[in-house]
Length: 68
Image (cartoon, rainbow, N blue to C red; front, side, top):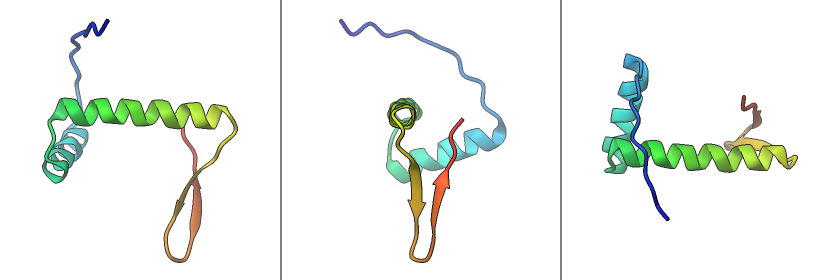
């Protein structure tokens, strides 16, 4: 069963600007971006709960991200 629930979301100007930029960059709706963000956060949370680390690496450095 794929029941859906509606909700109201209030964002700051900065958060809305970031969401709008992602929509343009990804050619996606706000709903699609928010759904993807929830799935990503859920995956990261599960991995961290299992003891994994979240790392970001560029050419010269590697940093561990802390997620609340």
